[in-house]
Length: 241
Image (cartoon, rainbow, N blue to C red; front, side, top):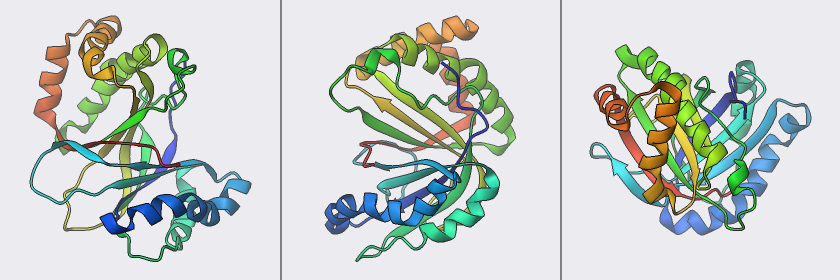
């Protein structure tokens, strides 16, 4: 299984009022298709997906949660400026609050979009954890190195050999096009497709992956991560499209 390296995504974090969620879920696929179809045809858009944030698993600080993330995989970073104006034409009969619009790139050796062999025959769809992570600026290189040497390979091991992880995206901010100042900032987004047994299997299997990758313990690995990054907002939800 090869990592998806040097791949760019436009990420749009949004807040939809509860009363409008039903309409949004019904219309979002068609609206995204209309906004992006010409870019799909000429290859500038490779894929796109919308993830909901239904339940808060972690939150650091006091702020209102947002509830949707749109990811658009683009051919290259130069495409982003051409595509973003079309995203702004998405038309719903209610107001969408844009929290942030940014260009992101896959963290090296850490993104595996394709489902692992162990989950391909499962009938149920996975649920998704979306993590907004803020790494202290002075430690961005160290965080990337930890992902490359430790966490990325551990996730690859799990996706290839276990049956509870569907896929994994690790993205880091390249350019922020817009950020709503009422909300906190971040510089990483992780999206993980999971099955229910991940709750009890995660630590054991991740520890195994860390040992195989770099002979570091689960406790030592995450003790350092806790010092250099904040898990700003982690939610549990589903993939809408």
